[in-house]
Image (cartoon, rainbow, N blue to C red):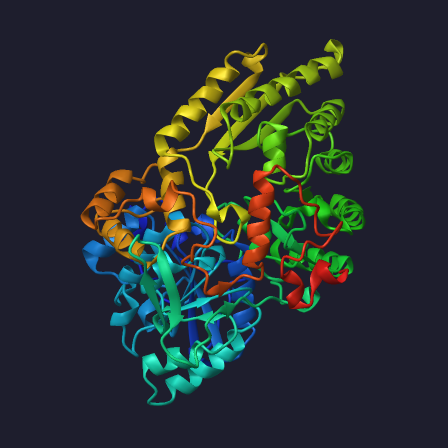
Length: 620
């Protein structure tokens, strides 16, 4: 057992010492004398959140299957330990061997959410090497980023050596082969990065130059060498059944957000919601063989001792073998006293029938995501459900014994009017009325509760709404309050609840989502002023960012409140996510006309995903 990096005195002084001690069940241990590549895998948030992220579990397992590589984990220290580490000059360390991150060959950081950007700087600075990539030497780790935010990595590009564009199961072998050559030779760091930029899916920001127009928009992002690709095309797993999957996931000491066995049944989504980045960047849709999933379920339960298993995908109802899988799981898991949980179900009779069986007698709340209050807006965003679908689904739920319903909406969607926003309250009221119409008084158990919550719309790259403006922060608040006032006018207002998100966090997310490299200085200055854990409202302070924008002469509204010209060059146009810009333009125009586009199984829309030669595009 390796010696802990923190003394007992320090561990007793922090809130949750088990975040930092490692040695969990299924943690991988290796002989360092036989290792050529040490990879520190980081999720830049607290341990409980990072341990729930499936992508890291997959890469951790995949890397550690290699005899020459040891992948270890590191997470952002909570503010209490962050303070102590700075005061006592304790370098950031990994959980497996409690080794300083600075001693590793790679520091891999997942960019899951824009509000974690200052935590990236926290991790690098506490590790003890330069925050800016251009200042690093051959002795420093190669900092590589992955995850959904890398589809526009420009705001954090100066802090990274490499971004991995696409699915991690594909190109790491080639990168590791090149790295071992680099490590054993007199090749410079710059020369290594130059060669790495030629590997499929590898984006090296230092190999590209960004130029601007007089109005502040991007003129071009172009390679500085002729042998560096002009566009970096994402890499995807074409045979999803052969992709590695962790049969022995590490079990956290603390209760993590996802404290259960997770089965990834499908990657991608057929639906084409126009606001949803994940539905676009994870195309094409690929399914895992149902017999393989049954095998995985039994093996993972045996190796973990978990008492719950969940199915993971962007839209689990669209998994074609769902009925077969669920019948098997409900039969087998009942024998083992294991619960089955089902996120991401659509509002239809099949899904509700499934939920009845899975949730048995105890009826927890059902969650629906209409996304918009009016049918006009649901057509604009291509949600693919009607008010009739929502009401029929609610009626079936009430008949099935549920009396608690959660509804998720967005405010500030493109073309939204006050009338559309008021529809959130009106639809919630219709659902409540339906309950009293459907369930006789003598059969009602408990109290009806309809909880509606609204987040603010944030346009994301590689969606049809990447051209759309956001509302101003004051407009968001005014619209949310107007909806709340509308709720208070409803007959069943005592059965209805409405909550909405913090507008400042949404505005800042919008800035970074479509930002360029000029924003790196904003992130750096805010971090130096004390910003970390910005995704946590108790730590977030927008004033630090306002000051950083003022000090750097940047108007944040330039990134949020203006509608982009249809032919504007975006900061991410040198990245190819697999959906063509022409398809997205067409969908943007179609959205503004309120026309619905059919899903990928019903009709191919020619998005560009077929170029990968896999998935639903080929009948899989």
